[in-house]
Length: 523
Ligand code: FAD
Image (cartoon, rainbow, N blue to C red; front, side, top):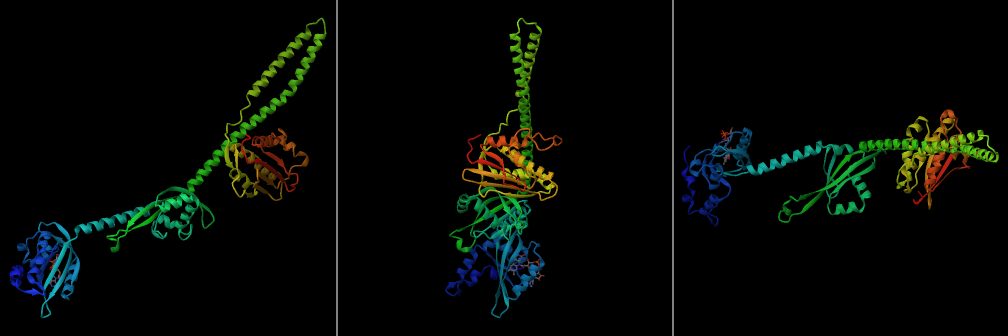
């Protein structure tokens, strides 16, 4: 390609010319020193002039490049269509701007942001083209990197097993993931709003302060009622994301926006398993306690039963001794019987002591503050299977506010478990009729009352007190009843400083009332 000295050295030709008030040589200087790669071509893109920045970017000296076609810069990966569009545009005498993959003199590639402007001659035809370009490889790399990171973050967030949602300052959703979308409907149109309202309500000031100061909130577990009126447990954590305003206005005066990132984990299944585990361990603990208590009562009863005849034997021995001492002289036979009796007595007393020593101690439970309502709910859970199989309808009325007392939790649970078991058994004994179990907890000024009502046959007036005596039972021995249930219940109630009785007025079955003081220094 031949060189074009006319354009290669424009300064000599235009030294005296002026453009407006600016002399042409000033134009040339400005173009020469511009930071942008500038080239001037003929109408076929053959380079007539290239400035220093052009040389810096492409690696070609001005002498090397002049006379070559701009296509020398093409790396041949830019689609043909781009060039066709470029040419179609500039041939219509319109400027074109776009990105081209260029190749430097040393073969290395760069991305060029190119603007080509047609230079129209006096006759109206395009005589030259003005090409300006800059290396945007680094900008493009950064843009792509940001884009890649955004895509990566979005895919990770989307694949996460926890629901994630990003909210702006007005609690509008900016970003969410698949797991979050699954909550929509069940927790209303915007689950985040419902969950944040619940967090606010449950955490009160702690939430407000953390929110106002954009401080993170560690995972907080809460139970939410769904649209289907079922309960679901969620663990919610809040963290904050700060964004610098990207608008031009904020370039010299940076402003920040805060976004709230809410992560939500559905822990309903874990909670269900934990609750099942807790109820099972409670069941095992109560069964063990019941067994020990039963053993205690049985052995105590046996000792009590044996003490009677032993006392009678003691009295007989004393009588015999007195008679023998009045008979003089002794014939020897009486002495032998007295000492044999004394020996038998001694052995019996030792056997009784051994029996007494076998009576297991009461459990080593310690006093705790508990809510009676929770105890009664646990009792109902423990009895669920029996209640269902007996077709019993349960009505549960908790006290409006917490019924907190200091108590031995397992013993108290066992007490109500016993009362509920009695009620179920009583209703099972009665054929036909309604089967209803009503449990209520009432708060009074200085004590709480728990009522356990059943629609069974009830307890006859004359037996109202007797049923609390050990070994008294209205059931036959065939049913393996020791008659210790209510006696044990009474013992537990007394240990808690309360009372237990059977309502004589109640005629639709049996109503047991347990009164427990609100204080807790009685045990
Ligand atoms: P080419 O054969 O040059 O052209 C490919 C297609 O472009 C053709 O099929 C045709 O449709 C069209 N075309 C090419 N020349 C003409 C013409 N004279 N009249 C009408 N249509 C034509 N290219 C780069 O790769 N990098 C650059 O930095 C660059 N800067 C340029 C600056 C200016 C001022 C001008 C005018 C052009 C520039 N070009 C640049 C475009 C360049 O001239 C080539 O068209 C391009 O490089 C493709 O080259 P090629 O050899 O692959 O195909």
